[in-house]
Each structure stands twice: as C-alpha cells, then as structure tokens.
Image 1 (cartoon, rainbow, N blue to C red):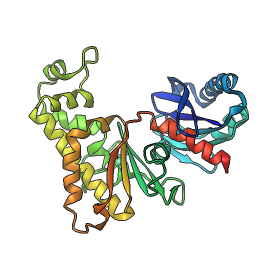
Image 2: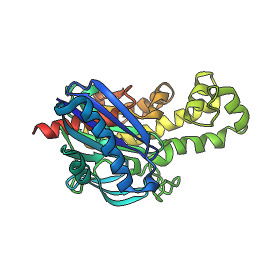
Image 3: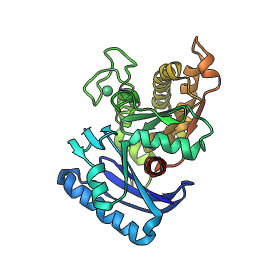
Image 4: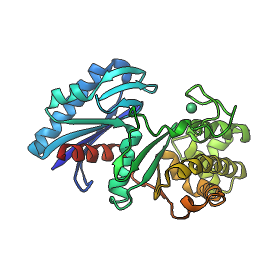
Length: 314
Ligand SMILES: [Zn+2]
C-alpha cells in the first residue's frame, strides 16, 4: 500500500509517493505560483497524481496534504495562508473528486510532526513537540500517539508565543514573538546589526555561486570562527530555548524534534538552547526530554503521505 504526500509551501510544492515504512518511491516538485489561483493549482496536482497512478495503479490508496497556513482539517479547507495569499480555499474535497483518492489535509508543521513521529522516532515516543525552523517557525504536537488539533484545528502556533513583551516586530504584526527572534528573517536582521560589511562577509563565507547573506552563509562564518556570527547563533539558541522551556513545562514531551533549514546550524545554537533548558527551576520535565534534529529535509511531505495512509486505513 502506497500513499501520496503533498507539501504546499509559499514557493514550492513537493509531492512524494512512499510506502508504509516511509520509503520513497517517487517524487515531484513544482513552483506553487499561488498568484495563478487555487483552481489552476489543484488541476496541476491532479495531473501529477494521475502520473503516479499510471505508475503505481491500485497500490496508491490515499493522499495526505500539508499546507503552510491555518487549516481546517475537518473540512479540508485552507482558511488562510499569508504565504500563498489565499483565503478559505477548499483543497481536499476538489482533489478527492479529481483523483478518486481520499485526502486528509493539515497544517504543514502538523504533517512534519507526524513524519517525525513515524520516521525519526518509529512511534517509540508518543509525546512529541516538533518545531519547523525556516523563514518562520511552525510547530506540531503528537500527544499520546495522536496528532493534537485543539478546539479549532489550529493548535501549535508556537512561532507566535511571546518571549519578550514589547519586543521585536513579527511578520504576524505582533511584537516579541518567538519567530521574531528565531525565524531566519529575524536571525539575518540581527546579523545585519552586528556584521557591518555585508558584501565582504558574503564574499568570504557564502558557497560559490550562491552569494547571498543568509543563514547558510552565517553558519559557514560561525564554523570559520567569526565572532559576530557565533554570537548571532548563540542569541538565537538562547531565545529558542526560552520559548521551548515554556512549551516543555506545559507539555512535558519525551522528545522535541527540530527540523527545517535553520536546524542545520544546530552546532552553533544548541549549546545555548540546552543551557536555558538545564537552568530551569522546575526541572522534572527537562530531565528526560531529548532534543533531536531531523535530517529528513522533506519531513512535511513524507509525514503527509504517512498520515494519509494512517487515515485511509482507519
Ligand atoms: Zn508573531
């Protein structure tokens, strides 16, 4: 039995075909081009799914979709997505009609959380918090082996947890959010404050052909011993630790999984993060919690495929 996983992001949309064990059999990706509208987008998904069906036939039994934004999982509607600029778009229903396969839809971080639960932890830990570290910060919760939705399906907006009253301005319009300190845009804004000669910095630390002032460049600089770059990552680790400590106190998870592009800088932010966790006064929930970095860069689409299979089998 095989499942299709779809990860809808602001820039790219990824599709995978995986089996129950999470093994990849096929994959596709295309530019989301949200400005062309949802109908055009869904048609495009339909064409790719039809191709998968030609190759795998009846082995394909379900579709799982993770979308960047606020999702109503009951009705398969993307309520709002700032990245796609779509409001109240039905996705699961029309795709189900087009393909004849049952579709389950969730927020993309929820699907990454499911992927972490099934793939990284092989279902051995049942209480997991997953944070996706990218431009923004998403999060998903697996509690007691089940995806936790909350009352409205929007549980896990950890990126907008306030860690600093009247702090930095967040993309959501609020101030002091975790994301406004630990999202890649915020990390690079802080780097700009501390690193004056951006041009020379990029020239020295960016990989050839990819000369941009981004987190990868900042990680390379930290590895080369650049003091300001190391300071930016240390501060980010401290801030992420502050947000995480609050979440761990509330949830007492067995494992926290960090994923997304920014998690690749683990070496430079984890020590400061762990220091915050190790110096909490109420220490019981911090004693056993494992902090894990997922190396699967496509956890969202894999998780979506496995979640769709799980739903389809019930
Ligand atoms: Zn915010």
